[in-house]
Image (cartoon, helix red, strand yellow):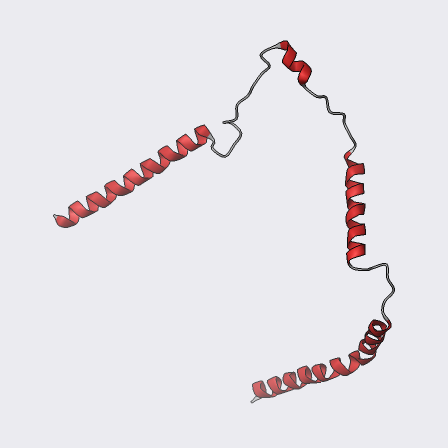
Length: 125
């Protein structure tokens, strides 16, 4: 009997929770808390109120965007000193890296080949 009553209570709780969630979903979709449905819509009460509205001229957005983009590019160029020539020490470093790439890559390539040879010999045994 205790088992039956505990299952009945559990089932009633589950049904009650599902019912409460359903009611909450219905009310939330009606009220739309996240949407613009709750905003007030006002109309002019007097004809004089319409004269206070400011007509905004239509400006081309591309000029504003191009100007802002050019400003951003100029700012980056200034911050990174891209207009200045490369320092001689940096040029020497770049040349030494270009010349010594083969020395750095060859041992790694040999190690990979050696590991592949060891792996293939292990599988053969």
